[in-house]
Length: 328
Image (cartoon, rainbow, N blue to C red; front, top):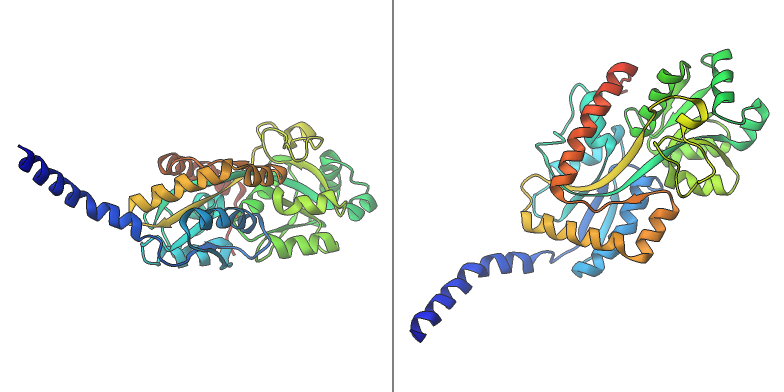
């Protein structure tokens, strides 16, 4: 009996060994997190917030690599065509995986078939803003003032965005259609260069992700008129929602950001990354940093993230259709 038990135990151990070794073998070298936008924007900020924590957890560097262009399509394609070995991840967004399917006639990647969702890192409201001095010079103190000015000066104001089809762009398009105003859309290659022109006064208005604009708002360089979420932001508690400020019922344009891997990435790697991201988001240092910037930490499961992506695609496909938004 003892011999039989010994043999069975040995066989069971042998059966489990490949799984154990597979887990232990990853990662043996640095992992890159591709951010499909330039450095300095919210996607980049969030990726760099979790990368060091993942590095500590797995004992390898998690390197953030910026590959901007085409509304996030360039970087997303890079990851979609990378080996499914856990060494290349994407910090995807509502744009790359919720909006672009409806905006572009043809994408160089399939947001569903080419990726496996890992976890949402955070949800982020956008903020409607102008350069403080410009707003003062034009006599625009709030959203109602802005709408009044825009209606009496159709086409005079320009609207900066991080690129055609991004959440920043479509938040503005949603506002234009609901408020009945016309502004000239000026797409940039990411939020950071658009913000530079906003602060410099070359761009008139922007519906930027809150974390990247918050330092400029707190410094008094940009004036926040409203946040685009259903509820006010903890980071800007005195700033109203667009629905509150202008009576645009149901206005909601919240961005989200999350990790994805190439389709076929082993489930054990996906689950391990999700678990460590969820842990990192609950650490005091990371959580406080994100909340202070207006982000709402998530860390949901791969299945939950997949369901959210599907729902967001349906929502934004309707916004694209109604607004007539086009990709450049």
